[in-house]
Length: 176
Image 1 (cartoon, rainbow, N blue to C red):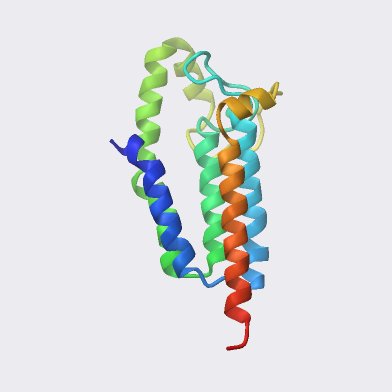
Image 2 (cartoon, rainbow, N blue to C red):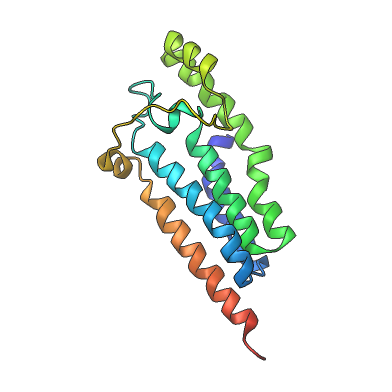
């Protein structure tokens, strides 16, 4: 259930975030690097994962078992800072406290069924969410996989949200 509602819920929450946001130049400049790192983390993960076909442990998957969700969390934190509004920040961070833990557990059970021995060994050496600072292996990033996994949607959403926040900043600072 949570797996199915997380994307539509994300669009609803994003609308609320953009409505409540009160960005400033400083908040945008402070949150933007964190959001960029999150988007890059997601892109690096999407360019190596072959969902349900092989157990992916290369690249950022050698740092955390959930690099897509970790990248999403960094994106959300970055945009929470950029929004400079407590309600917007709560809307952005809500899924990571309520929805994503259950989604991660469900996906890990799924991987354990698909790749029992490989996943158990992987789980023992790689943290679930917060990445370790070393140990990532080289990966063979594939732009085709990035496209197949439709990660460009994150880049488009990132750009769109940044444009809206920047426009809102300009509108809020304009003299009445």
